[in-house]
Length: 594
Image 1 (cartoon, rainbow, N blue to C red):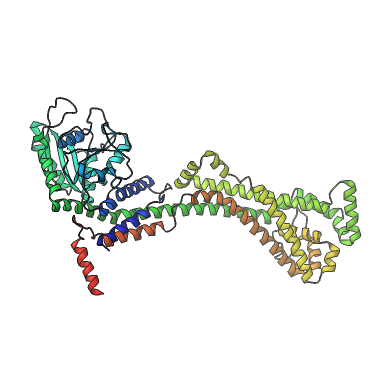
Image 2 (image 1 turned 180 degrees about the vertical axis):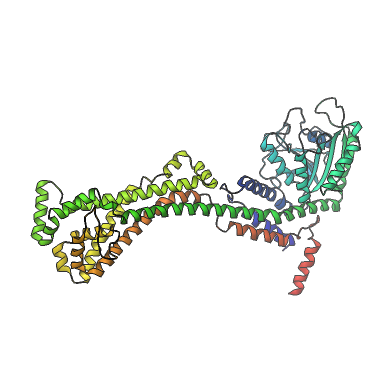
């Protein structure tokens, strides 16, 4: 296996971990994090992986710089043909133009370098978003010149493309003018070239006669002060050209052309350029990848905070339900009226006398068309508990929406969901009513089963049959909603009344301790059902996070991939495909150790 395969494999693995949407949440400076992700992904796709896959591929020199610096004119002048279209209007370079020789045509028309830009050939400026490829005999084998958009273009897409192209270059031909060489925007790119050790030459154009030598001297001083001392600097004088798209005289650009030809013709010089830029780009990953991983951690922290806010809101909703279940408020209103009917008219006592009494109640109810008080109390309890569940869910939804809206990441997600959906999230779901009905009815069935099971276990079947499972079950349901039910004896306060009668009846059937146990089981079962309902309601919020949150372990995977690249970073082959001497020595030591 070649030494470079370890490095190339590590880079491909790193690239695989960048395929996900890593920064969907408004956490920290997410816009800058997304931009850094695009830049790193672009450099891997456009330069690092293609260059390591074909270390002997032609050299790509990108001509970049400020608006009006004469980049297109310079390319035309170096080639000796009108291959790009300079002009007065800005921006002039709407689509980048790559100029290469016939020998390297296949390499650059294929999607080896800058695979995201469709190729176009032929006359014309090219459409935005494409890479126009021009083939001419004037460009020597092993070299291509790429005319990039302005780095300070008024069009944001042009600025981003310019940065992408520069990141894909083996060599920067950075152009600036005598009037603008001290501007901040160019120096931001030049400092980036320094930080990434990119091979670089600076071309100072449009130098007036009175500034010849003086401006270049000051620019050299600035290069030295910014850690770029020794950078090749070429000076192009200001000339009065017969027309806007005229080329510069051959002698004016000859030093630049000779310098480029010398690099291209000398295999060692060419290899030095490639290795310098490759090494710098690889070294930069040691900072860029961990920074991205830290940003992913911020994404997970923001998601965790939103999940916590949602959980707290619905925990508060559950607490609201608990309070309503125990404070006696549910045992007022309609429930109180039906309880009074059930107790005050003697229906309960009659229902406990004999089967004949129960049958008589049913016949009377059938003839009168009025449900028995027992059924009315059961329905009233159902409605009361359902209303309490809906109230708890509504308050939780409102609090969750408020909590999300107070956080930048939450606001952004709600905005992405849309105003209509956000409004729906602020109240319980349309499915809640049915869920609450089913839960309460299932719970009532569970309570009746508890009564039956307890009666069978304690051999109280005869007494239970006499009293009635439904009647005893209703008494147990009432006990659930008493503040001290089942803990210190059932004393249920119902709008100033008491349920001493229900307590005595239940204790007579099951015993004091059994009543406490039954009440606790019934209450816990109801709480479990309500917790399930509220969890499903909360999932409406967390589903928004589930759809966008970066994969778990993404940050750790990025760090591990970055470490793997760092471990192999010295395995850069030279221009003849031979591995870095240092890597070869290290490999020999490892082999000797075995």
